[in-house]
Length: 172
Image (cartoon, rainbow, N blue to C red; front, side):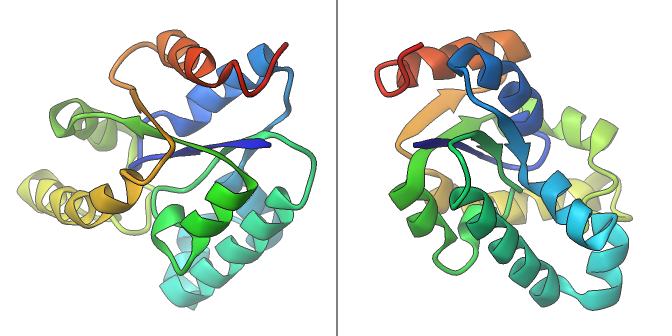
């Protein structure tokens, strides 16, 4: 079974996934990087083709990863919120929500979130308002994950928390 990491932008899914995968003896796949292999950089694609086209490609790439060998997969922040993506993810793997409180998340987003299509060009209060709006709509979906892991800690600590939660599912 796959381990699928979900959570808001900049919560650490990719960093934690890269650390967690070797501990579980599994490969790591990053959904956004796999999408980029197909369409190039996400922001220009999103801007020129629109969100609907991006979500279609995202869905196809997600299905391809889920049909492949078991892996730790870092998803995009909106991936589980589209169509029935979360249902498919739950059927094909163990879904883990990396939960980071807003006050810990905002500095990460301000530092590294500028390339995110849904936040592009926003700063200050406008950025915080948009993050709050997206987070509010996504929290009920994230909350359907099988495991919720507090992720406002060092990458290694978060990976250890996930490993502890899922180790019975993936013996070394």
